[in-house]
Length: 212
Image (tube, rainbow, N blue to C red; front, side):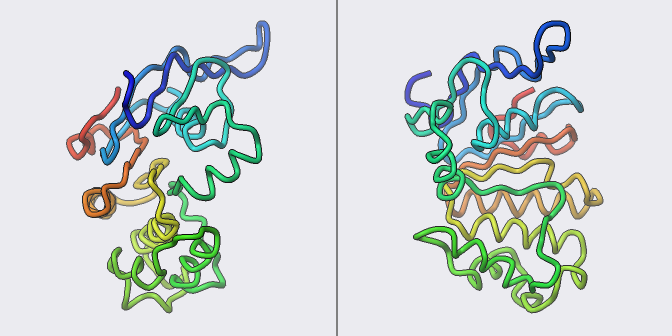
């Protein structure tokens, strides 16, 4: 699997010890190429979020190895992980986690202050189709619009890797498909690697390289 952008090599994740031990992930091996749009499917409790958290540097592996761009991120120390999450990864979650007393534009501008080479906030808001709503507060936006703000906030960091944890889970079917298409289009436009975890098999057809 040498030369792949993302590589999971026999990755395991366990919690607890002895009889209380729970294996959240067992011997997971796969790869993802740079610029791919991937949807990882699985039922609740299958270890999808655990996998995403380890790839995003938010959780430690119990065994195996994770590499991104030839760099073994599973061996980074805490300081290096902070820098990795800050500069290399954008996160989009099921619940939007917007700051309620900031406008859509201001929520995105916060992300641009974290990195050295951000995409201007106004430009990213325009990319997700919310220019006319940039001065609205989250409570004044629909669920789909709030998720688009969350996507814009993640994209503003100009990350090479965008990780999405059930980004359509709180949305209705039509709005969810629109958000998924937005992520797909942005991936193609910016050649960003997008990894989405989901339990909805109907969304699988959008992926370049889905895993089950």
